[in-house]
Image (cartoon, rainbow, N blue to C red):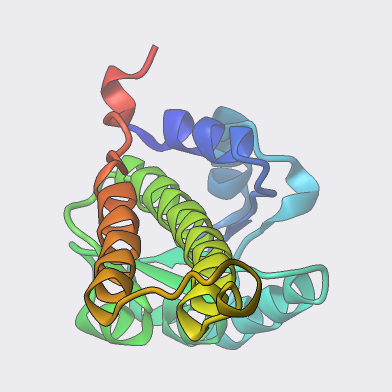
Length: 186
């Protein structure tokens, strides 16, 4: 029931969407129209090997994620840059995927991607902070200011400055918030 909203949110994130299905053409085309997925991004009556081939074609354009729940999805889930199995799906789909989302609602896929993006943004912020901080403080601790200014950090002060850097990185990471659930977004 949340597929249309979830796909709309994924499209807002700048992702190209498609449907690879083993189901019959009419059913898949009807689904694509309901979900606003372009028909040139839809394929039907696919065997597992054919799903894999389509995924590999899309992969030539850039990284590809695959969401699936069945035995027929397992090869494509394993080959995707990010295989996402629905928790209510088959065990082989879950074993083939890099990420298993709980339940059968697709909104958790959106949430997982938002959390991943926010996490990577925090990682980048923390790397920049730590690198910049150490670029300034390490030469001071090594005595670069001693010849000209007679300033040398004592070992306890240098340790305190390093602890301050670590604390800042941890506090920045703690500022990350999980996204609001899709059903409560405006």
